[in-house]
Length: 275
Image (tube, rainbow, N blue to C red):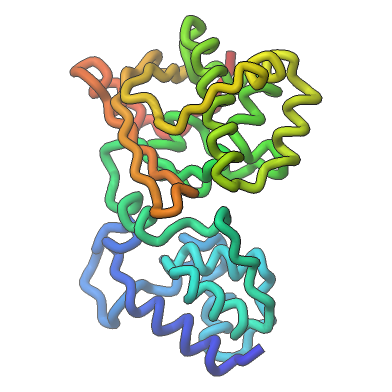
């Protein structure tokens, strides 16, 4: 662990960010450039004291999980992330075509969206980042682990996950989920364990997998159901990374009624989904 270089790297990247870069209000006049330690700590999910100690060359060695969070919070590129791992005395995560490090360009766009629900997805349907409205609309996906990180897996194994959609649209959504997974696996996504688990657990998935359908695009329009505000019609826009491994999905309300319901959702915040 190279404490002096790690401290300098963290401090310089923190000072190189503005509140607007990470979706925060400018707030009061700032005496020093960049983000405050408290702001970075909030983004990362760590204490400001721990970040202070790292920047002062006296903190303990960060775990790989903490380094991943720091890389995301500081909006590091893959090269910068790997450098951060090496400075902290860890081997960087393997570079494959598909990885869970959120692409910095997608994060920069996500940070600037405050009037639309937006989330970054992997090609296996894993939520890598959500803004506040996406959490309020779809629930907080950050607590999932293992195979359950994939929305495709949850769709076929957890009936509650289908409550986001009207009953008359769920069969179509099932076919789209399977077709998108086949497209991802064909393109090189790691996911054989996900496929094996779904083939074993879900008869519906096995039937749809046998159809050999392939689909990469997201719906242009859809209706989502929230337990507090009801059905919301949304337009969907998808922005892909160059390797097609990650997608920024933006959901904007369609029509006056949907707009009013989305505004109400922004006020009441995230609510627990229930039948």
